[in-house]
Each structure stands twice: as C-alpha cells, then as structure tokens.
Image: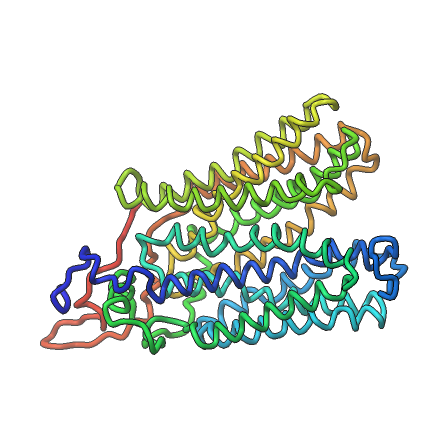
Length: 476
C-alpha cells in the first residue's frame, strides 16, 4: 500500500497514457528513422549510379564498381561500439547518449550527397559513421526498457519499440524510390531522413529521460509504480559486474541465440531473393509489393506476438522464461523449415517460394518477444550492456553469412549449392535456439542488484530498497 493505493489498483499506475508510454513511442520512432537511414542507400544507390533512374538530369551520377563494399560499410562501424555503448549508457544515462548518437547519424546522412562528390570512399566514411552511431541504438533501447517498463508490460513495450525497425524499412523503400525518381533527385532522400533525425533529437530532448527519477513531468503514482515493480534503486547504480555477466549461462544463451538469429536472418533477407531470381527466374527485388511484403509481415507479427506473450505471462499460463523460449522457438524453427523446404521445391513453384519467404520473415518477428527482450528479464540495470555485448558480437555473423554464399555458391544457377547454404542457415537457427531453450532464463539474476547500498540497523542488514516488494522471480 502506498498513498492509499495498491500495486493492483489501476490508479496506482498513473495516467492511462503515461510517460513510460511516451518513451516507448520515442524508441519506436528512433528505430524507424535509424533503420530508414540504414536502408536508404540500398535504394538510392541505383539512382546514384544510373542517370536513367531520375527525371532530373542535373543530379550527378557516379561510375562506381564497388557498390557491394559501399553497402556493407555500414556494418563495419556497427559492430565496433555496441558493448561500449551499453557501458556508457549504464554509467552516464541514455538521454544524452542518444542525442549525440542521433546527431552524428543524421549529420552523416545529410553529408552523404556532398561526400559522394569526393568519391565512393566519402560515402563509405559516412556509412561507417552511421554504423558506429547506430551501434548505440539497440543497447540504449534495452537500457531504457529496463528502466521504464514494468515486467507485466515488457513484451508489448519491447515489441512496439522494435517494430520501428520493419516500419522504417517499409516507409523508406518506396519513399526513397519516389524521391530519387522525382525532380528533387536522390540527394533529397538523404536530406529528408537526416531532417527527421534532427526533429527526433528536438522532441527527445524535451520528453526523454534516462530513468523515471530524472523525469520532471512524471506523476508520483507512475514513478512509484515503475520503480516498485522493478525493485529499482535508481540513485545507486555502481560499476558493471563484468565477471558475473561474462560467466552467466543465461547471458551466453542470449548471445548464442543472437548469433543464430543474425546468421539466419541475413540469409533470409539477402540471399533468398537472389535465389528466387537465379533459380526460379523471378526478380522479386524489382517488384515493390514483394520487396515490402516480408517487412510488413514482420511488423504485423511482431505486434501480435507482443500482446499474446504478455497476456499468457500475466494470466499465468506459462512463466516468463518459458514464454521467451516458446516465442524464440517460433522465430527460428518456422524460418528453418521454410529454408529447408525452399531448397527442395521445384523451380516452377514461385508463388509458394515467395509465400514462404514472407511467412518466414513475418514469423521471425516473434524474436522481439523472445531473445531480444530477454536482457531486460535478466538484468534491468545492465540490460543495455548485455544487449551491446551480444548484438555487437553476433553482428559479425550477419557479415559472415553473405560471405559464405559468395565463397560456396560459385554458380548461382546451381540449386545444389544453394541447398548447402539454406540447410546451414536452418541448422544455425535450430541449433542456437536449442542452446537458448536449454540454458536461458526469465529470472532476474542476483548480480543485477550487486551494487545496492547496504545499511545496518539494530543488528539487521538490509538493502536500501528492502521495504519495497521484491522483483517478480520466475524460475524455469
């Protein structure tokens, strides 16, 4: 009981649309803008290297023979700073960290047309900077979800936040194509997205905060509801217990699952369209509907699974840890089945193949209620660090997967070579998921509170937050 309310009383949670919901909306929009900038170049580069792709012939075009290098350069920067990003967010808070990251990201985006005049390496430099700055996004999302979202709302809040990723792609692909083909020309696609980034910074400056205790407008009821549900001690966050993090089996279950996810997802999105083109003779990249459909399916499934996951946890049908395992299994096993089936389908089964691609990428949206939200379950105080460590390490494999295709598929029209790639990706999906199912947890780890201040009163040792309810512990 607090100020006449109980934790189960809706009034105790504060306004129906509270400050925590505003933060989830801001995370959604940040990831939408970020993934829009990440995707923008893959569409714009067509107009940048082909004068026939625009109606404005005053717009410069370039004769670049290293387009694959340019497109991959984003990930060179993306894998470098994520663990550091999580640590910085833990030490100094995420509000200003995201302001700086989005500013660098947006500025690099706006400068891309100017740097293109210098040469392809000017664009590569901008993309590396964007990758480095966006390396702060995922760890910051996990950090903020850990500080702002009560466990009973976690799956939905995570799903909505991460749904910004497919939404940004769905929005950017046609918008970039339209702008590039118009009299404005391709440079304005970069200016447009960069401006959205600057607008986001302005809004975030006034509405965002690293934790409820730092927000000037949050109601006392909502702040207490969040802090008590998380058993939070916001003023007593010490150094990261790295030894405990690196020796935790549930943390490594998260890392291994992310490795399999990034390998399999890279195969789904970057290689299956090429396979359908070369083996089945259908270029779905040139079809706007099929280009956007997998991302639209992913967005829809992400939101649906988020609601279902929270519902079955709150109703007590399954524990939190079991729910993570169920949805992660959906996110990996369905795409694995689709990959194996694709490798054996006849070459004239184009509609079935395209449907499988859409279904596989769509159902993979369950990852947002599975492994992606799991760092917040394990350690709300250090979830950004766990996400940065795991996502940074696993992104290396999203680079290796396409390189494996380039090395093994020496003849793109040889179906037996593609079968090796698809079965390997399916094995990565299933094998890493099995590791996650066996060793992951939905329980708050003891080292999450390892830095809580202790006091001694009347020969009784307590933690600073002993008078509050203990966090919900779910053992699996």
